[in-house]
Length: 427
Ligand code: F0G
Image (cartoon, rainbow, N blue to C red):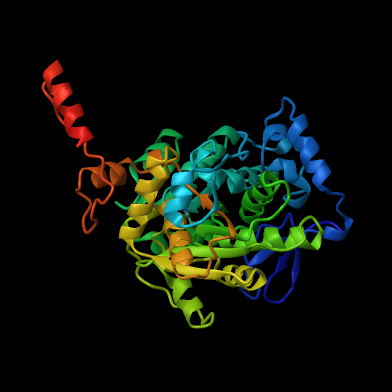
């Protein structure tokens, strides 16, 4: 049996080539692979990583797992190439989080600076295969930047819908530079999300938000690669920030498939971290997975400033599959964690730091044991949001105490002034 689109609610099936994002019943769709017929093994993925080769897709950390991602001809693949991101360890960071074995998988070191490239290589490849001429997404910034870049490489028209005034500088710069038609919607992300869905339906544009199941297939490879990085010995926990819940959906599906295939002996537990001001998943979780109640979102971590997450049902499924937990962290905790990640020389954007803040909180609550092995996923690059970083260090971020500030010092152009500054720095 070939892969099909399957509704996660009613099980209805559609061919992969049909352009649809939801089932007739309204349920979200999965790309369902016929796992029993796939010839995959740890050795195959190891060989591909070692073998590489000239075409970009052969050097991609997404397409290395192609059987589990998308059955498509190699010539059609649009790849930068993405993935193969580093797994960093920092003793100082581990100590701050309270763990002996803590590492961070830096998805901000993808071609456009966020994990979105993993889903976008698949989404754009499939858009091209379907013969689409234009693609669109609503975005808090990173999806827009990634889609704009991949669409430009594939020769597709890109249209991005972003919440006006709430997108970090680096991301809006990328969308404009890569040539996307950039629509600043007077409203929040959730308003942009509903407008883009209507626009795609009415205007025949291919939708590339993570409601699109092909995006999720690419994002699964964060987990595949992370487990490969660890020599196929899965960690106890994978901790990551959660906004529109695409990653929560993808990570659970990835783990479920790995276990079905016998590639891992057990599933790590997922820990989804939300900003306290944008916490609909946390609220549902705290009441035993009560139905989603959208919230009006506000947080310094604009990437996850989302009140009505599209992938909610898939996220709940992932958390149930993996005995997962959800935790919320304040903006102060996010910016503290960011300062510590940054000062370790690793660096990330605020939303990514939420993962580290969440890991620390779960350790302090005793949910994660100090002896457990934990990987946090850093989703976006430090350079995405220079304003948040500079404002923090200058002590100008509203409502945030700059506990780890590294203030710039203005000096006269003289050796005495330098000596004085060094002396001050030692104190
Ligand atoms: N971290 C970063 C840096 C993000 O950009 C996002 C989402 C998330 C975490 C949350 O991931 O949505 O899968 O739960 N950014 C989207 C965007 C919404 O438009 O770029 P999620």
